[in-house]
Length: 215
Length: 80
Image (spheres, rainbow over the protein chains, first blue to last red):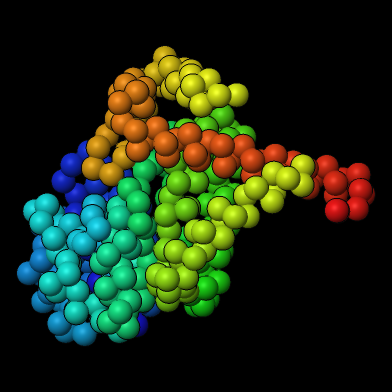
């Protein structure tokens, strides 16, 4: 398997995501995944497009994003709706705000598989190991252990839940709130299609009163 | 507990963080916020306030459910 890992570092937030991505890079190297690292100055659109054009199986991006783009070192999009064809029929794993909302759906329409978040991602500095575990666990389940997309997503959400409860036990309630929000916002297309995810949200809302009623 | 009371409780925890861990930061997208800044944002940022309240309630419900299930399994009470 060939992979590209993109990790800019330029503001107060990205040094943390840069460090989170180091674990993923280490796992890739240990697992024999041929990984090209595009870090800091290399994490720009031209380099990303150049490496993607060579043909890879897996695209990893750890940094900022928005609904339609993944952002690079120059704070410009490395991937957006105009060049996301490059991710067609590939696996994409991101830690970035919002990108599963439109960009991920577009990649999925092009037969790509996309792991990302539909809301703003948040974390707190009093629980960095826990947030690192939550952001990286899906990668381990899917690409290191080779589990299916559906199982990897289910297991990742269970991990977020376990970590959120653990943070409450540790008295880090605000971190737990962020952990739970990230959990709800996590998407994996093809584990679920974007349409199924929307249905899932409605079902979750219907489920909540049933639980309360039983108590 | 009303929404206002819950928000006050959340702010209490943030005040405690500001007092005991001044280096604490919330990374919210591209922003890095101190506990004091989060308290101020909660007053004016409706979306953030809604997220924090929704997730706090959801967490409380899930922890209650988890506790109930543990009690049942510990006491051998059959599940209904």
